[in-house]
Each structure stands twice: as structure tokens, then as C-alpha cells.
Length: 384
Ligand SMILES: Nc1ncnc2c1ncn2[C@@H]1O[C@H](COP(=O)(O)OP(=O)(O)O)[C@@H](O)[C@H]1O
Ligand SMILES: [Mg+2]
Image (cartoon, rainbow, N blue to C red; front, side, top):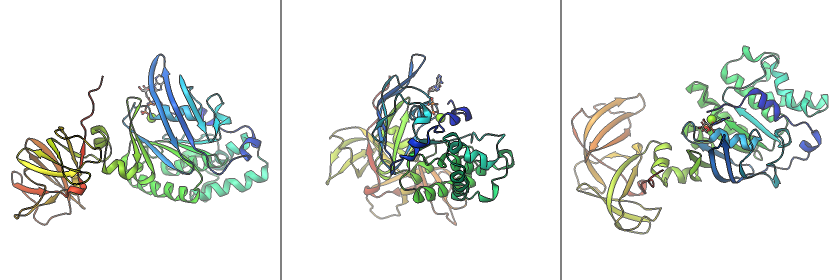
């Protein structure tokens, strides 16, 4: 909710070239039971998280969930009220931002407006007292990494948003930081540029495999495309953490299922064990078979998570996991049809390839899904 500023970026420029020169090949970021409070209100609650060297971890979550605070505490802009921050094997909790060897990129670019692009990129190197010939070599190198070689003489105001963000990335990488912190770096850009930039960040990370990245976003596409692991934040707590695909396929909570990829969640009951890792549940009159990766116990009421793109038309014959619903809306979006159904009083969204003759509102539609693609999820524990 509170953005990181240009002044703060300035404060993480390393002042001491000797320490920067001792950079190891990649460094882990460790949160050890870290809490942060503002004026007595705890906004980050006992966060324990490791970002392994060379890995991208994305923190996603709604506005106000504590994502930026998590980055600020790694950068050293805010002190934890308890716990430790580690970078590599160093406890950096008490170090100033400029002693932490981090690079940072934020949503609003935070370039220095009075400096040309090349001076922005040179800033961190100059602050650490790098020799002039090192700067002369490194600045074009970094501009080339982000495809901005032709723009060194321009001022930030003469660049588009996407170009400014490329420069901000070049500026962050110029002093060869051990870790890169990205705070919603693409959320000020329009959709098409954002897609292109996701590809570029992925390529950049491929070219700099030792760089350890903590990437904050509220956009699931960015998180799923870029991150090895994803943490889902809610009200200052990490609600769920896991390998990106596993978290998407087998969300451990309702909140995780809804936040990462807008799942359909049906209230189901009467769980009975089926094959290994599978269970049967009741949904109205239907019996459904699903994955039970969280080992929910027999008899349990829970949610069945089915992604819109996993729902198919069932046809007439006997099919496993079939439901009948009534069509509530049909929307054509060029490359897909989105259909909303109600079944047993619950709403179900399905996405399918465009149809020449789509179903009409009020039609009865039989749909089904593969048991291996649907997952049982516990209801979130009551909060408060
Ligand atoms: N400097 C600050 N002073 C007081 N409260 C703050 C400050 N920075 C953030 N907060 C509060 O901490 C909570 C988490 O904020 P933040 O980490 O910015 O969330 P996010 O980045 O997920 O949107 C919010 O309730 C926000 O209002
Ligand atoms: Mg934020």
C-alpha cells in the first residue's frame, strides 16, 4: 500500500566497492520468523521463508496483505520487530540498506528524473566508487541486457512506461547485486507491454542464473510464469507456499484456490476414500471422484476445486464426474467461450474453444471433468 520511493532506492546503492567485489555466486534470502509492526500494528506476522540462490520466489496477495513490507524489511528500509533477515550466510538485520548488496525495482520506476538514462544506470556504481572505466563498460552492458542501448542519452520523461521500467531494471543490476527485489514491477504497464516484459524478465533470469529474486505481484500470470515457488499472502501472513505448479493444481485452502487462478469451488460432502490419493464425494445427487492430496479424512465436508478450463461437455452416455447445469451466461472472447452454469444452486464457470453454435441461456448442459484434474480443498478455518 505504501510504495518504495526514489530516495529509498538511492539508499540501497552500495557505498563500498570492496564488499560488492566479494559477491558470491548467488545468495539465498532468508526470513527467520520475521514480524514487522507500524505504530503497534503488526502487518507482517512471523514470516519464515527461504529464497534459494538463483531462484525466483513470487509473493502474491491482495493489496494491504504485507507484500511490500516483506520487501522493505529485506532491503533494510524497515526494521523487524522480531526475527532475523539473512542474505547468504550473513545476518543483515542490523545492516544499513547500502550494505546489503540488493537491487530493487518498484512499480512507479522511481528513476532519477534529472539524470539521463546512462547516469541513472551508473548511479549505483558511482556511489560505490567504481573506477570510471568499469562504469564505462558496465553501463552499456546493462542497457544492452534490457534492450535499451539506443536510449542512454535520453531523460526518463522521454521514455514510455515500459522503457522506463527496463532502465530501472538495468539500474538495479548494474552494481551486480546478490539479490533482486521487484515490487509489482509491471503493474503500471498496459497488458501487451506487460506480457512482453514477463518474457524479458524470464530471459534475463535465464542469462543471470545466480541472481536470487523475490518478486512481489498481485498478478497470477506473472507469478505462475516466472516463479519457481509462490507464497500467497493474506493479512500479513503467508497463507500458502509451494512449488508453482503444485500450488496451482492442489491449492491447500479456499483462499489459495481463489487467488491463484479463479477456481470453481463446489461445496461437497460425505468424503469416502477411493484409490490411492483419491476420494469420492457427494454433490447434490451426483457422486464425484477427485484427488485428495491433503488427505482430508472420511466423512469430511470440503470444497471441490475445478478449474474453468478443465470442464468439458459430457454428451449423452454414462460418464464419470458428470453434472447437469443450467446456462446462465455465454460470453465470446475471441479465442474462448466463457460459459456460466448453475448446478445444485452453485455457480460454475467453464472456458472452452469457440463454438460455431454456442449453448443458449437457460439450456440444460451436461458437463464433466477428469478426476485427476480436480482436487479436494479444506474450507479455510474460521478467521478472527
Ligand atoms: N509506513 C507505514 N506506516 C503505517 N502503516 C503502513 C506503512 N506501510 C504499510 N503500512 C500498512 O501495512 C499493511 C501492509 O502494507 P503493504 O506491505 O504495503 O501491503 P501490500 O504491498 O501487500 O499492498 C497495510 O495495512 C498498510 O496500510
Ligand atoms: Mg505493495
